[in-house]
Amino acid sequence: MELTEKKFKMPGNIRRRKLVNSVMIILCVIAGIITILPLLYIFFYTTKSGITSLNLDFFINMPKPVGEEGGGMANAIVGSIILIGIGSLIGIPVGVMSGIYISEYSKNITAFIIKFVTDILSGIPSIIIGIFAYGLIVINMQRFSALAGGFALGILMIPTITKVTEEMLKLVPQSIREASLALGVSRWKTVLRIALTTASSGIITGILLAIARAAGETAPLLFTAFGNSFWQTEIDQPIAALPLQIFAYAISPYEDWHRQAWAGAFVLILLVFVINLIVRFVTRNKFSGNQ
Amino acid sequence: MENDTIITDTIDDSEDIHDSGKHDTADTKTALRTINLSVKFFDKLAIKNINIRVKKNNVAAIIGPSGCGKSTFLRSINLMHDLTPGAKVYGDIYVHNEHITDNNVVDLRKKVGMVFQKPNPFPTMSIYDNVAAGLKLNGIRNKSLFDETVEKNLTYTGLWDEVKDRLKSPAISLSGGQQQRLCIARTIAVKPEIILMDEPTSALDPVSTSKIEELIINFKKHYTIIIVTHNMQQAGRISDYTAFFYLGKLVEYSRTRRLFTNPREKLTEEYVTGKFG
Ligand SMILES: Nc1ncnc2c1ncn2[C@@H]1O[C@H](COP(=O)(O)OP(=O)(O)OP(=O)(O)O)[C@@H](O)[C@H]1O
Ligand SMILES: [Mg+2]
Image 1 (cartoon, each protein chain N blue to C red):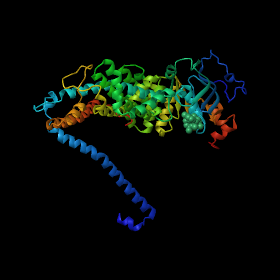
Image 2 (image 1 turned 135 degrees about the horizontal axis):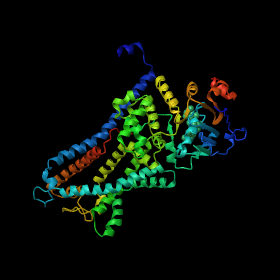
Image 3 (image 1 turned 90 degrees about the vertical axis):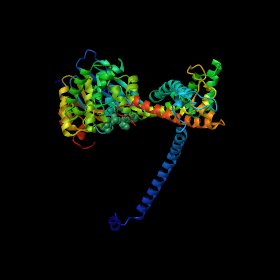
Image 4 (image 1 turned 180 degrees about the vertical axis):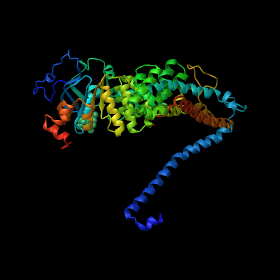
């Protein structure tokens, strides 16, 4: 190193370039740290505060009145799983199919409109989606229900999934589709068995993001699923949900409930993590596609 | 065989029946015939009034400088332009005496296979699955048929010995030239009647190239092959007829030996002797 520097004197502009290069690298590293820090902080703080109140009771018991020991959030955990399930049943097929439509069949104005509307939908505050579900389902059924909550979550998931599906499909080279078509494979089979499979790992990532976001939503559930302090798994009845329960407990004046809220927050993160693992495991592909 | 055919780019200046613009339905020797075939991309004409007749069990080579419309011509035969934005195809194409738009496009593409200019294996599939893809995607479920098809076609393309121990590894782990031979195997595995090949050997080493040329010559017995190539020695070695394209027009279509030794057109002579292009 020293030798080279003695032998070849670097011209000034190369020195400047090297300096600019180092400065940019340092800035990028700092930006990276700024991104990771809050995440790590949230994760560790929630774990630290939540894990101490976490025990088996929390998973299998119902909430208990203030002062009684050993209450849990079994109903809210199951409620959240049901709500996410209903939301996924609505959001995933609709999102994936409209993504396919935009990417594969879009030559016309319909696709443009769908794309435009999806973009707008993704910017609508989630509470408005809740009001929409309230107007459409709660008022007609004349009661709060898991169905209404799941519906709201499903609508919330659609734009993310549509966008990701469209973008991942666009990354699949046209030549791969042509290879399939040239073998005498029909158009729809080419889309499903070739394009979608090639894009699948990216699409699955998008679906998981949408699920994770929906799992933590509180606002759209306030006047749809409503919450329930009892064990309830019928989809036409009001149902408990972790975010609602966490909210209720966190604003209560009781120390004991605060601890439970932390535990709830921790379980919510855990739940998203577990769903992630399960989906990854079930959909694992021998070779990843464009990811 | 018969007398040489010359087909030029307009209907009027030839007395040859192939240029008459009329289609003879009793003709059983012809595998492919195009009548006034033109392709436009948006408003730009890429090929103009191409009239060509390829006989069954023949190899036709297409030569010409880059951008002269060779791929465009080839891709119109299996209706690959259907999905290209802005592409419009004019004129008539007959495959085995049937107008290509008379039947289902899927059936046409089963009859007319294509090897593309750039290797395009299915990235999520193994080597094995790539070769069997045409069968599998068309609903066949017969493991022993797959095994047989994979071994046979990989042997044809000279890839079997190189990959027989890792048939389950991803196709994209192969080198570029191996991928191209895999794509050729995938195409011939579905037994098309006509095989369109767009510079199939441009990425191959001399040994693999001669394997593919051998394959083409052997396949002539059962198939009709139309091959685009930049390699004139190759055209000379394997083809019966050669078409010379220039700026989107068919300048000359003659028996290969004639085209290279005694071309009708001055332009052809200049091109094959390397004066331009
Ligand atoms: N999808 C497309 N959109 C617009 N123009 C195109 C498209 N495909 C081809 N062209 C144009 O059509 C002309 C012919 O292209 P083509 O690919 O057929 O050339 P080629 O003879 O195969 O060349 P090469 O030997 O380099 O492969 C070129 O001018 C090209 O720019
Ligand atoms: Mg080409």
